Length: 501
Ligand SMILES: [Zn+2]
Image (cartoon, rainbow, N blue to C red; front, side, top):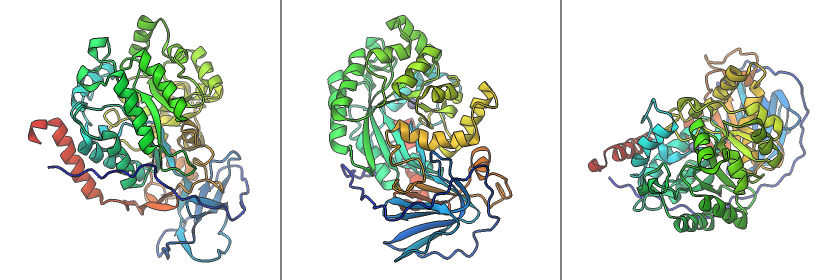
Protein backbone atom coordinates (compact mmCIF):
# COMPACT_ATOMS: atom_id res chain seq x y z
CA UNK A 1 0.00 0.00 0.00
CA UNK A 2 2.85 2.33 0.69
CA UNK A 3 4.06 4.76 -1.93
CA UNK A 4 7.25 6.58 -1.05
CA UNK A 5 6.81 10.32 -0.75
CA UNK A 6 9.52 12.11 -2.69
CA UNK A 7 11.76 14.29 -0.62
CA UNK A 8 11.19 17.92 -1.58
CA UNK A 9 14.16 19.96 -2.60
CA UNK A 10 14.71 22.67 -0.01
CA UNK A 11 14.99 26.30 -1.08
CA UNK A 12 14.30 25.87 -4.76
CA UNK A 13 16.47 27.81 -7.15
CA UNK A 14 14.28 29.37 -9.77
CA UNK A 15 16.28 31.08 -12.47
CA UNK A 16 15.68 34.75 -12.97
CA UNK A 17 14.86 35.96 -16.43
CA UNK A 18 16.13 39.13 -18.02
CA UNK A 19 14.04 41.91 -19.40
CA UNK A 20 15.33 42.41 -22.90
CA UNK A 21 12.55 44.08 -24.79
CA UNK A 22 10.51 47.22 -24.19
CA UNK A 23 6.78 47.03 -23.71
CA UNK A 24 4.48 47.57 -26.65
CA UNK A 25 1.65 48.15 -24.25
CA UNK A 26 -1.07 50.42 -25.54
CA UNK A 27 -3.90 50.92 -23.09
CA UNK A 28 -7.28 50.34 -24.64
CA UNK A 29 -10.50 51.22 -22.96
CA UNK A 30 -13.78 49.45 -23.30
CA UNK A 31 -14.69 45.88 -23.94
CA UNK A 32 -12.91 43.68 -26.36
CA UNK A 33 -14.07 41.01 -28.71
CA UNK A 34 -12.59 37.75 -29.83
CA UNK A 35 -11.17 36.60 -33.08
CA UNK A 36 -13.57 34.07 -34.49
CA UNK A 37 -10.85 31.72 -35.67
CA UNK A 38 -10.30 28.20 -34.46
CA UNK A 39 -7.25 26.38 -33.23
CA UNK A 40 -7.09 23.92 -36.10
CA UNK A 41 -3.76 23.25 -37.76
CA UNK A 42 -1.64 24.97 -35.21
CA UNK A 43 2.03 24.80 -35.99
CA UNK A 44 4.23 24.89 -32.94
CA UNK A 45 7.93 24.46 -32.46
CA UNK A 46 9.00 23.48 -28.96
CA UNK A 47 12.43 24.74 -28.05
CA UNK A 48 14.57 24.44 -24.98
CA UNK A 49 15.81 28.01 -25.18
CA UNK A 50 14.77 31.32 -26.72
CA UNK A 51 11.45 33.08 -26.55
CA UNK A 52 7.91 31.85 -26.19
CA UNK A 53 5.43 33.96 -28.15
CA UNK A 54 1.73 33.78 -27.34
CA UNK A 55 -0.29 35.57 -30.02
CA UNK A 56 -3.54 35.66 -31.92
CA UNK A 57 -5.89 35.92 -28.96
CA UNK A 58 -7.45 38.49 -26.66
CA UNK A 59 -5.04 39.69 -23.95
CA UNK A 60 -6.21 41.09 -20.62
CA UNK A 61 -3.17 42.28 -18.70
CA UNK A 62 -4.83 43.17 -15.36
CA UNK A 63 -2.32 46.00 -14.97
CA UNK A 64 -3.00 49.37 -13.37
CA UNK A 65 -4.05 50.87 -16.72
CA UNK A 66 -6.59 48.16 -17.49
CA UNK A 67 -4.73 47.23 -20.67
CA UNK A 68 -6.69 44.92 -22.97
CA UNK A 69 -6.13 43.92 -26.58
CA UNK A 70 -8.77 42.22 -28.70
CA UNK A 71 -5.86 40.71 -30.61
CA UNK A 72 -2.54 40.84 -28.82
CA UNK A 73 0.65 39.10 -27.89
CA UNK A 74 2.70 38.16 -24.85
CA UNK A 75 6.40 37.36 -25.20
CA UNK A 76 8.22 35.26 -22.61
CA UNK A 77 11.94 34.77 -22.18
CA UNK A 78 13.28 32.52 -19.42
CA UNK A 79 10.84 32.76 -16.54
CA UNK A 80 9.83 36.38 -17.25
CA UNK A 81 7.47 38.30 -19.50
CA UNK A 82 9.46 40.58 -21.80
CA UNK A 83 6.72 42.15 -23.94
CA UNK A 84 2.94 42.60 -24.07
CA UNK A 85 1.27 44.40 -26.95
CA UNK A 86 -1.34 44.53 -29.72
CA UNK A 87 -1.37 42.40 -32.84
CA UNK A 88 1.42 40.01 -33.69
CA UNK A 89 4.68 40.02 -31.74
CA UNK A 90 7.74 41.66 -33.31
CA UNK A 91 9.92 39.21 -35.21
CA UNK A 92 12.13 37.49 -32.65
CA UNK A 93 15.85 37.01 -32.85
CA UNK A 94 16.85 33.42 -32.30
CA UNK A 95 14.74 30.35 -31.57
CA UNK A 96 11.10 30.76 -30.68
CA UNK A 97 8.22 28.63 -29.46
CA UNK A 98 4.86 29.90 -30.67
CA UNK A 99 1.56 29.37 -28.89
CA UNK A 100 -1.37 30.09 -31.16
CA UNK A 101 -3.97 31.75 -28.96
CA UNK A 102 -6.55 32.40 -31.67
CA UNK A 103 -10.01 31.99 -30.20
CA UNK A 104 -8.51 32.24 -26.72
CA UNK A 105 -8.28 34.68 -23.83
CA UNK A 106 -4.84 35.30 -22.29
CA UNK A 107 -4.76 36.36 -18.64
CA UNK A 108 -2.31 36.20 -15.77
CA UNK A 109 -2.22 32.83 -14.01
CA UNK A 110 -4.68 32.80 -11.11
CA UNK A 111 -3.55 32.98 -7.49
CA UNK A 112 -5.18 30.95 -4.74
CA UNK A 113 -4.74 32.62 -1.35
CA UNK A 114 -6.19 29.94 0.93
CA UNK A 115 -6.28 26.16 0.76
CA UNK A 116 -5.82 23.04 2.90
CA UNK A 117 -4.57 20.57 0.33
CA UNK A 118 -4.58 17.54 2.63
CA UNK A 119 -8.39 17.81 2.65
CA UNK A 120 -8.57 16.40 -0.87
CA UNK A 121 -8.61 13.03 0.87
CA UNK A 122 -11.56 14.01 3.11
CA UNK A 123 -14.27 15.37 0.82
CA UNK A 124 -17.94 14.69 1.37
CA UNK A 125 -17.98 14.52 5.16
CA UNK A 126 -20.47 16.51 7.29
CA UNK A 127 -22.14 17.65 4.10
CA UNK A 128 -24.91 19.58 5.85
CA UNK A 129 -23.10 20.94 8.91
CA UNK A 130 -21.98 24.43 9.93
CA UNK A 131 -18.34 25.21 10.74
CA UNK A 132 -18.10 23.99 14.33
CA UNK A 133 -20.15 20.83 13.68
CA UNK A 134 -18.18 20.17 10.51
CA UNK A 135 -14.86 20.61 12.33
CA UNK A 136 -15.97 18.37 15.18
CA UNK A 137 -16.73 15.55 12.73
CA UNK A 138 -13.57 16.05 10.70
CA UNK A 139 -10.85 16.60 13.30
CA UNK A 140 -10.73 12.87 14.24
CA UNK A 141 -10.57 11.96 10.54
CA UNK A 142 -7.74 14.43 9.93
CA UNK A 143 -5.92 12.94 12.93
CA UNK A 144 -5.22 9.95 10.64
CA UNK A 145 -3.34 11.79 7.90
CA UNK A 146 0.27 10.93 7.24
CA UNK A 147 2.87 12.03 4.70
CA UNK A 148 1.68 9.57 2.05
CA UNK A 149 -1.98 10.58 2.30
CA UNK A 150 -1.00 14.25 2.36
CA UNK A 151 1.21 13.88 -0.70
CA UNK A 152 -1.51 12.12 -2.68
CA UNK A 153 -4.16 14.63 -1.63
CA UNK A 154 -1.93 17.64 -2.29
CA UNK A 155 -0.87 16.32 -5.70
CA UNK A 156 -4.50 15.83 -6.73
CA UNK A 157 -5.51 19.18 -5.30
CA UNK A 158 -2.72 21.02 -7.06
CA UNK A 159 -3.56 19.25 -10.31
CA UNK A 160 -7.10 20.57 -9.95
CA UNK A 161 -5.64 23.99 -9.19
CA UNK A 162 -3.58 23.93 -12.38
CA UNK A 163 -6.46 22.71 -14.52
CA UNK A 164 -8.55 25.62 -13.27
CA UNK A 165 -5.93 28.23 -14.20
CA UNK A 166 -4.01 28.55 -10.95
CA UNK A 167 -0.25 29.07 -11.04
CA UNK A 168 0.35 30.05 -7.40
CA UNK A 169 -1.33 28.45 -4.40
CA UNK A 170 -1.16 29.20 -0.70
CA UNK A 171 -1.63 26.08 1.38
CA UNK A 172 -2.40 26.33 5.09
CA UNK A 173 -1.37 23.09 6.75
CA UNK A 174 -2.14 22.86 10.45
CA UNK A 175 -2.64 19.14 11.27
CA UNK A 176 0.51 17.34 12.41
CA UNK A 177 -0.34 13.90 13.84
CA UNK A 178 2.45 12.59 16.08
CA UNK A 179 3.24 9.59 13.90
CA UNK A 180 2.31 11.19 10.59
CA UNK A 181 5.83 11.77 9.26
CA UNK A 182 6.84 14.82 7.26
CA UNK A 183 3.41 16.03 6.19
CA UNK A 184 4.61 19.58 5.51
CA UNK A 185 7.42 18.33 3.28
CA UNK A 186 4.85 16.16 1.49
CA UNK A 187 2.93 19.27 0.42
CA UNK A 188 6.09 20.99 -0.84
CA UNK A 189 7.03 17.86 -2.79
CA UNK A 190 3.56 17.79 -4.37
CA UNK A 191 3.93 21.39 -5.58
CA UNK A 192 7.27 20.54 -7.16
CA UNK A 193 5.72 17.48 -8.76
CA UNK A 194 2.75 19.32 -10.31
CA UNK A 195 4.62 22.53 -11.11
CA UNK A 196 2.67 25.10 -9.11
CA UNK A 197 4.24 27.98 -7.20
CA UNK A 198 3.59 27.36 -3.50
CA UNK A 199 3.17 29.60 -0.47
CA UNK A 200 3.29 26.94 2.22
CA UNK A 201 1.78 28.17 5.46
CA UNK A 202 3.08 26.24 8.45
CA UNK A 203 -0.05 26.11 10.58
CA UNK A 204 -0.41 24.98 14.17
CA UNK A 205 -2.93 24.25 16.92
CA UNK A 206 -2.02 24.06 20.62
CA UNK A 207 -5.45 24.39 22.19
CA UNK A 208 -7.22 21.06 22.40
CA UNK A 209 -10.38 20.29 24.34
CA UNK A 210 -8.47 20.03 27.62
CA UNK A 211 -7.71 23.74 27.28
CA UNK A 212 -11.11 24.94 26.09
CA UNK A 213 -10.37 24.56 22.37
CA UNK A 214 -12.41 22.79 19.73
CA UNK A 215 -9.98 20.14 18.37
CA UNK A 216 -9.36 16.84 20.17
CA UNK A 217 -6.12 16.81 22.13
CA UNK A 218 -4.68 14.12 19.84
CA UNK A 219 -4.30 16.53 16.91
CA UNK A 220 -2.72 19.50 18.67
CA UNK A 221 0.93 20.25 19.38
CA UNK A 222 2.25 22.00 22.46
CA UNK A 223 3.40 25.57 22.11
CA UNK A 224 7.12 24.81 21.96
CA UNK A 225 6.69 22.07 19.36
CA UNK A 226 4.52 24.32 17.22
CA UNK A 227 7.07 27.12 17.26
CA UNK A 228 10.00 24.76 16.65
CA UNK A 229 8.16 23.10 13.77
CA UNK A 230 7.40 26.47 12.26
CA UNK A 231 11.00 27.62 12.45
CA UNK A 232 12.09 24.31 10.93
CA UNK A 233 9.69 24.76 8.00
CA UNK A 234 11.13 28.22 7.30
CA UNK A 235 14.70 26.96 7.56
CA UNK A 236 14.02 24.07 5.19
CA UNK A 237 11.88 25.63 2.51
CA UNK A 238 11.51 29.41 2.57
CA UNK A 239 13.06 31.06 -0.46
CA UNK A 240 13.04 34.87 -0.14
CA UNK A 241 14.57 35.47 -3.57
CA UNK A 242 12.71 36.97 -6.53
CA UNK A 243 11.04 34.34 -8.65
CA UNK A 244 10.77 31.89 -5.74
CA UNK A 245 8.83 28.67 -6.29
CA UNK A 246 8.35 28.07 -2.58
CA UNK A 247 7.84 30.52 0.23
CA UNK A 248 6.81 29.74 3.78
CA UNK A 249 4.44 31.71 6.00
CA UNK A 250 3.47 31.35 9.65
CA UNK A 251 -0.13 30.30 10.33
CA UNK A 252 -1.58 29.40 13.74
CA UNK A 253 -4.98 28.04 12.79
CA UNK A 254 -7.69 30.13 14.47
CA UNK A 255 -8.63 31.78 17.79
CA UNK A 256 -10.63 28.72 18.86
CA UNK A 257 -7.80 26.24 18.33
CA UNK A 258 -4.71 28.30 19.26
CA UNK A 259 -3.63 29.83 22.58
CA UNK A 260 -3.04 33.55 22.98
CA UNK A 261 0.63 32.81 23.69
CA UNK A 262 1.06 30.89 20.43
CA UNK A 263 -0.67 33.61 18.41
CA UNK A 264 1.62 36.24 19.90
CA UNK A 265 4.86 34.25 19.70
CA UNK A 266 4.14 33.01 16.20
CA UNK A 267 3.78 36.61 15.02
CA UNK A 268 7.10 37.46 16.62
CA UNK A 269 8.74 34.44 15.00
CA UNK A 270 7.39 35.39 11.58
CA UNK A 271 8.69 38.92 11.85
CA UNK A 272 12.10 37.78 13.09
CA UNK A 273 12.33 35.62 9.95
CA UNK A 274 10.86 38.15 7.54
CA UNK A 275 8.01 35.85 6.47
CA UNK A 276 4.28 36.54 6.18
CA UNK A 277 1.50 35.72 8.65
CA UNK A 278 -1.78 33.96 7.93
CA UNK A 279 -4.70 32.71 10.04
CA UNK A 280 -8.47 32.14 9.92
CA UNK A 281 -10.43 35.06 11.34
CA UNK A 282 -14.03 36.27 11.60
CA UNK A 283 -15.41 33.28 9.71
CA UNK A 284 -18.63 32.64 11.63
CA UNK A 285 -21.00 34.20 14.15
CA UNK A 286 -20.11 31.34 16.53
CA UNK A 287 -16.47 32.39 16.44
CA UNK A 288 -17.36 36.02 17.08
CA UNK A 289 -19.55 35.09 20.04
CA UNK A 290 -16.85 32.86 21.51
CA UNK A 291 -14.25 35.60 21.10
CA UNK A 292 -16.47 38.18 22.76
CA UNK A 293 -17.32 35.82 25.62
CA UNK A 294 -13.76 34.69 26.22
CA UNK A 295 -11.67 37.77 25.47
CA UNK A 296 -14.21 40.59 25.56
CA UNK A 297 -13.15 41.54 22.05
CA UNK A 298 -14.27 40.95 18.50
CA UNK A 299 -11.96 38.72 16.43
CA UNK A 300 -10.36 41.72 14.71
CA UNK A 301 -9.82 43.56 18.03
CA UNK A 302 -8.27 40.38 19.43
CA UNK A 303 -5.98 39.99 16.41
CA UNK A 304 -5.00 43.67 16.63
CA UNK A 305 -4.00 43.30 20.25
CA UNK A 306 -1.79 40.30 19.47
CA UNK A 307 0.10 41.96 16.61
CA UNK A 308 -1.89 40.14 13.95
CA UNK A 309 -2.81 43.06 11.72
CA UNK A 310 -0.47 44.65 9.21
CA UNK A 311 0.73 44.65 5.61
CA UNK A 312 2.50 41.31 6.18
CA UNK A 313 -0.72 39.57 7.30
CA UNK A 314 -3.54 38.04 5.28
CA UNK A 315 -6.61 36.54 6.93
CA UNK A 316 -8.81 33.74 5.66
CA UNK A 317 -12.52 34.66 5.37
CA UNK A 318 -12.91 38.01 7.21
CA UNK A 319 -16.70 37.79 6.97
CA UNK A 320 -18.18 39.11 10.19
CA UNK A 321 -16.66 42.57 10.36
CA UNK A 322 -18.17 45.65 11.98
CA UNK A 323 -17.49 48.88 10.06
CA UNK A 324 -14.72 49.69 12.53
CA UNK A 325 -12.99 46.39 11.74
CA UNK A 326 -13.20 46.97 7.98
CA UNK A 327 -11.59 50.38 8.44
CA UNK A 328 -8.88 48.87 10.64
CA UNK A 329 -8.02 46.17 8.08
CA UNK A 330 -7.84 48.88 5.43
CA UNK A 331 -5.62 51.25 7.37
CA UNK A 332 -3.24 48.47 8.41
CA UNK A 333 -3.12 46.96 4.90
CA UNK A 334 -4.19 43.58 6.25
CA UNK A 335 -5.23 41.20 3.47
CA UNK A 336 -8.26 38.93 3.20
CA UNK A 337 -8.59 35.59 1.41
CA UNK A 338 -12.20 35.48 0.21
CA UNK A 339 -13.50 31.90 -0.14
CA UNK A 340 -17.07 32.23 -1.39
CA UNK A 341 -17.85 28.57 -2.15
CA UNK A 342 -16.61 27.35 1.22
CA UNK A 343 -18.45 30.16 3.00
CA UNK A 344 -21.63 29.17 1.20
CA UNK A 345 -21.10 25.44 1.79
CA UNK A 346 -20.76 26.02 5.55
CA UNK A 347 -23.40 28.76 5.67
CA UNK A 348 -20.80 31.04 7.24
CA UNK A 349 -21.90 34.29 5.61
CA UNK A 350 -20.78 36.69 2.89
CA UNK A 351 -17.55 38.67 3.19
CA UNK A 352 -17.86 42.42 2.59
CA UNK A 353 -15.43 42.33 -0.31
CA UNK A 354 -16.35 45.68 -1.87
CA UNK A 355 -16.13 47.46 1.48
CA UNK A 356 -12.75 45.88 2.23
CA UNK A 357 -11.32 46.84 -1.15
CA UNK A 358 -12.71 50.38 -0.84
CA UNK A 359 -11.11 50.64 2.61
CA UNK A 360 -7.73 49.76 1.07
CA UNK A 361 -7.36 46.14 2.19
CA UNK A 362 -5.86 43.66 -0.28
CA UNK A 363 -8.44 40.96 -1.10
CA UNK A 364 -7.68 37.74 -2.96
CA UNK A 365 -9.69 34.61 -3.75
CA UNK A 366 -9.32 31.18 -2.22
CA UNK A 367 -10.95 27.81 -2.63
CA UNK A 368 -10.38 26.91 1.05
CA UNK A 369 -9.91 23.24 1.87
CA UNK A 370 -12.06 21.01 -0.27
CA UNK A 371 -13.63 19.31 2.71
CA UNK A 372 -15.75 22.49 2.60
CA UNK A 373 -15.61 23.04 -1.17
CA UNK A 374 -15.79 19.68 -2.89
CA UNK A 375 -15.36 21.29 -6.34
CA UNK A 376 -11.94 22.69 -5.49
CA UNK A 377 -11.28 24.70 -8.64
CA UNK A 378 -10.00 28.26 -8.45
CA UNK A 379 -11.36 29.43 -11.81
CA UNK A 380 -14.88 28.65 -10.63
CA UNK A 381 -14.43 30.91 -7.61
CA UNK A 382 -14.48 34.01 -9.84
CA UNK A 383 -18.08 33.25 -10.77
CA UNK A 384 -18.99 32.29 -7.23
CA UNK A 385 -17.43 35.48 -5.84
CA UNK A 386 -19.34 37.65 -8.28
CA UNK A 387 -22.70 35.94 -7.79
CA UNK A 388 -22.33 35.92 -4.02
CA UNK A 389 -21.39 39.61 -3.88
CA UNK A 390 -24.23 40.70 -6.17
CA UNK A 391 -26.81 38.50 -4.44
CA UNK A 392 -25.94 40.05 -1.09
CA UNK A 393 -24.97 43.64 -1.96
CA UNK A 394 -26.56 44.39 -5.35
CA UNK A 395 -25.45 44.59 -8.97
CA UNK A 396 -22.70 47.16 -8.38
CA UNK A 397 -20.93 45.06 -5.77
CA UNK A 398 -18.55 43.33 -8.19
CA UNK A 399 -17.85 43.60 -11.93
CA UNK A 400 -16.52 40.72 -14.00
CA UNK A 401 -13.18 42.52 -14.19
CA UNK A 402 -13.21 43.01 -10.42
CA UNK A 403 -13.54 39.24 -10.05
CA UNK A 404 -10.54 38.65 -12.32
CA UNK A 405 -8.60 41.34 -10.45
CA UNK A 406 -9.26 39.62 -7.10
CA UNK A 407 -7.99 36.30 -8.47
CA UNK A 408 -4.79 37.86 -9.82
CA UNK A 409 -3.64 41.23 -8.50
CA UNK A 410 -5.55 40.92 -5.24
CA UNK A 411 -4.00 37.53 -4.61
CA UNK A 412 -0.53 38.77 -5.45
CA UNK A 413 -0.96 41.60 -2.94
CA UNK A 414 -2.14 39.19 -0.22
CA UNK A 415 0.98 37.09 -0.74
CA UNK A 416 3.32 40.09 -0.90
CA UNK A 417 4.20 39.47 -4.55
CA UNK A 418 2.51 42.26 -6.46
CA UNK A 419 5.91 43.22 -7.84
CA UNK A 420 6.30 39.95 -9.76
CA UNK A 421 2.94 38.15 -9.98
CA UNK A 422 -0.68 38.91 -10.87
CA UNK A 423 -0.46 40.82 -14.18
CA UNK A 424 0.92 40.50 -17.67
CA UNK A 425 3.65 43.14 -17.74
CA UNK A 426 7.27 43.11 -18.86
CA UNK A 427 9.51 42.11 -15.98
CA UNK A 428 6.90 40.04 -14.18
CA UNK A 429 7.08 36.27 -13.87
CA UNK A 430 5.68 34.43 -16.89
CA UNK A 431 2.69 32.87 -15.10
CA UNK A 432 0.13 32.94 -17.90
CA UNK A 433 -3.24 31.29 -18.53
CA UNK A 434 -4.50 30.84 -22.12
CA UNK A 435 -8.20 29.98 -21.97
CA UNK A 436 -10.03 28.32 -24.91
CA UNK A 437 -13.16 30.24 -25.81
CA UNK A 438 -13.83 28.82 -29.26
CA UNK A 439 -15.98 25.83 -28.34
CA UNK A 440 -19.67 25.28 -27.74
CA UNK A 441 -19.56 26.80 -24.27
CA UNK A 442 -18.29 30.22 -25.34
CA UNK A 443 -18.29 30.68 -29.12
CA UNK A 444 -19.56 34.09 -30.16
CA UNK A 445 -19.66 35.60 -26.69
CA UNK A 446 -19.23 39.39 -26.80
CA UNK A 447 -16.79 39.81 -23.92
CA UNK A 448 -14.09 37.23 -23.19
CA UNK A 449 -13.81 38.29 -19.54
CA UNK A 450 -17.54 37.73 -19.13
CA UNK A 451 -17.01 34.32 -20.72
CA UNK A 452 -14.33 33.47 -18.17
CA UNK A 453 -16.18 34.78 -15.12
CA UNK A 454 -19.86 34.18 -15.91
CA UNK A 455 -19.69 31.22 -18.25
CA UNK A 456 -18.64 27.62 -17.89
CA UNK A 457 -15.00 27.59 -16.81
CA UNK A 458 -13.06 27.29 -20.09
CA UNK A 459 -10.47 24.63 -20.77
CA UNK A 460 -6.90 25.79 -20.83
CA UNK A 461 -5.05 25.91 -24.10
CA UNK A 462 -1.90 26.47 -22.06
CA UNK A 463 -0.91 27.26 -18.52
CA UNK A 464 2.63 28.57 -18.03
CA UNK A 465 4.35 28.93 -14.67
CA UNK A 466 7.60 30.80 -14.93
CA UNK A 467 7.54 30.13 -18.67
CA UNK A 468 7.23 26.35 -18.21
CA UNK A 469 4.21 24.52 -19.55
CA UNK A 470 2.05 23.06 -16.76
CA UNK A 471 -1.13 22.41 -18.76
CA UNK A 472 -1.31 21.85 -22.50
CA UNK A 473 -4.65 21.65 -24.35
CA UNK A 474 -6.55 20.80 -21.20
CA UNK A 475 -4.10 18.13 -19.99
CA UNK A 476 -1.71 18.30 -17.11
CA UNK A 477 1.79 17.69 -18.45
CA UNK A 478 3.66 17.08 -15.20
CA UNK A 479 1.91 13.89 -14.04
CA UNK A 480 -0.63 11.46 -15.50
CA UNK A 481 -4.07 12.30 -14.17
CA UNK A 482 -5.02 8.63 -13.98
CA UNK A 483 -2.08 8.02 -11.67
CA UNK A 484 -3.00 10.94 -9.43
CA UNK A 485 -6.58 9.69 -9.31
CA UNK A 486 -5.53 6.21 -8.22
CA UNK A 487 -3.32 7.66 -5.49
CA UNK A 488 -6.15 9.88 -4.29
CA UNK A 489 -8.61 7.01 -4.25
CA UNK A 490 -6.25 4.91 -2.15
CA UNK A 491 -5.47 7.78 0.24
CA UNK A 492 -9.16 8.60 0.71
CA UNK A 493 -9.93 4.94 1.44
CA UNK A 494 -7.08 4.67 3.93
CA UNK A 495 -8.19 7.71 5.90
CA UNK A 496 -11.84 6.60 5.91
CA UNK A 497 -11.16 3.05 7.02
CA UNK A 498 -7.70 3.00 8.57
CA UNK A 499 -8.01 -0.68 9.54
CA UNK A 500 -8.02 -1.52 5.81
CA UNK A 501 -4.58 -0.01 5.24
ZN1 LIG B 1 -9.49 27.43 5.79
